[in-house]
Image (tube, rainbow over all chains, first blue to last red; front, top):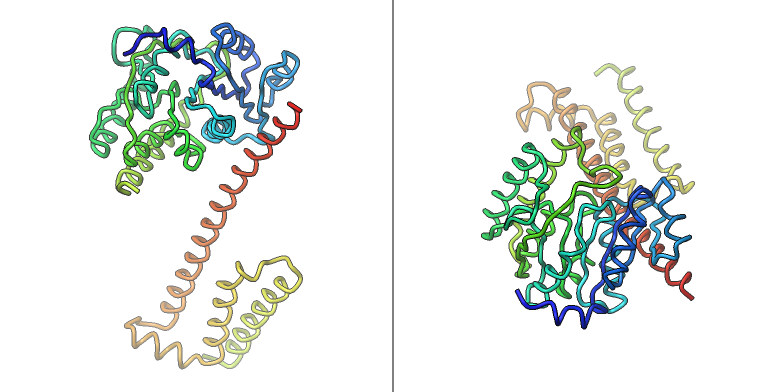
Length: 240
Length: 113
C-alpha cells in the first residue's frame, strides 16, 4: 500500500458516491464527514419517501435526485455515470447510513491508484473491523465467496461489501452494466470475467446509524437464490 | 366433432382473431406484440374449420387423442407468449432505469446553472 501523502494532493480526482434511500437520520452526518475530509461527493437520492431530499437541498448538498426508486444498484450506477461525465478517475461508493468509515477511503483509493481496477473494502481480512455482522449473514457470505472463487479463481472475502473504489475501467464497465438490486457480488464476478483487477482491502465497518439494511430476514432467501444464480450465469459467460 | 361444436369453435376463434385485430387497429395493442396472439387465433381457426387435419396431425405425432394434442399445443403457445412478455418487461424495466438516471443527471445539471 502506498503512502497517503500522494492521496491528499489529488483528492479532486476522487468522487464519493453516497446512495441515500430514506436516510434522513444520518445523511447530514455522513455528508459533513465527507466534506470535512475534503472529498468531492454526490448524494444519489433514490426516490426517498422521507425528508432526505429536502434536507440535502436545504443544506446545499450536491444531490442527484432520482424521480423514482431504482434500488441500490440503479442509484449507485447513477453515481458512476455522474463520475464519468464529470471526469473523475476514481469513484468510491460510500453508504449514507453510517456503516462505512471515512477514514478508510484513502486506503481503498490508494489501492486503485496502485493499479487495481476495483478495490473492495473487506471486514473479514485484517483485524480492523469490530462489526462483522451476524453468524447467519457470515454463513451466506461464505457461500457466495465459495461460488465466486470457483468461477473467478480469486478469493473475495467480503462479496456483499458496498464500500468499494472503482478506477476508470471499472467506472466504464459499471456505467454499462450494474444490476439494479443486490449488485455487489454480481458486479465483482463480471469485473473479474472481463479481466479487471479486483482486490480486497481491510477496512472497519460500523453498525448502521439509521435506516434499515436492504436485506431483511424475509428477503434473505430470495437474495441468496438470486445472487447465487447471477454468479452462475455471469460466471459461465466467459470473458467478453 | 358435432356440427354444433364446430360452429362454436369457428365462431369463437374467429371472434378472438377479429378482437385482436380490432385492438391493434385502435392502437390498444402494438402489432409487434400481437403477432403471437394472431398466430394462435389463426391456428385455432384453422383447427376449427378442418378438425380432420387436427386428428391426422395428432395421430401422426403420436398423441392418443386429438384433445390432448390441442391442449399441449395451446399451453405451449401460451408459454411462448408469457416468455415473450417477460422479455418485453425486462427491456422496458431497463429503459425505465436508464431514463430515470438520465432525468436525474440532467435535473442536477440544470439546478447547478
